[in-house]
Image (cartoon, helix red, strand yellow):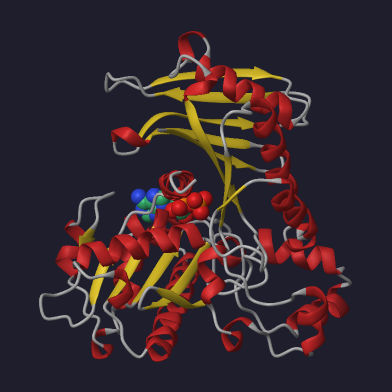
Length: 405
Ligand code: ADP
């Protein structure tokens, strides 16, 4: 009942080993980084039974994912860093996959046809899927006894109706290239939605909620009676809310305008929209804590970035309430959603007349990292803070699938 969760990126591998027999206790976690560079690194955190954390950090060249995965397996199973006696103790491996295209609406056990499908949709996620595929290939080779499961960031949104996922572009772009809204952070939204229903004491199929994931990347889902009906990200994770360095929704005519006026290429504009925009673009810093520090020092652009960020979340709450037709809760999650009192207050301050009334005192005093209700006692819609845990969700979904075979 030990599940290894792998998030294999283009140059890094993040991992966590869960003991599912002990309520999902984390046995160890770690990060392999700077794969393919002259000098790489692995940081392995062992969580022994004692409350003290042991961290083992090493620098060494990591020329490819195979060497990276070998290091992961070695740290987990060998010497003083070990948390299991042999690789055979690993029951299964859950892989986080950013893009499953239209192929996958639930986790699946990896076989050659899954690899083939993931390869075929590389054009939809050129930065992510190749790294995922490298991680899958090496995990299959190094842990042949452990079934491999893929869990998709896009799967939770496969319930969207065509009118929600299609763009009003010539229809053949969808037919030929599958250009449509996919949405991301689905594992987080699904997990937070499940926790929201549990918190409210309602069956998921009788719960409607708006999940608000505000981290470095930000997205929102409208979930009606357990099924996602809309999501703010699109073909890529660039759409929707304003984010740390991503612009979110912008008039698409801005791009040809910039190309013409500034002599920028499509690639330049893509990089600007993904890496130089959002909070960073407006006020120079992408971390919300730094935005607050600058606001406190009287920086007007930081104040503007903060109000722009919150305004767009409010905008989507209104749109999603209208689409849902009923709403039991708004659930804030991820780094900003779970911790940022000011953002939650600003987002919700005008929502009272729609039935979501925030309680400023509860918002301020809610213990960090804890789930809780920050709405007034008479608020018809509950405003909740629900910590997300994507890795645990992947481990749970992996185990659930393995238990069916
Ligand atoms: P990622 O999308 O990389 O998983 P996180 O969910 O960790 O990101 O969120 C990162 C964001 O959360 C950053 O903007 C950071 O400023 C913000 N954040 C983290 N802790 C706090 C805090 N205590 N107060 C306000 N914002 C916070």
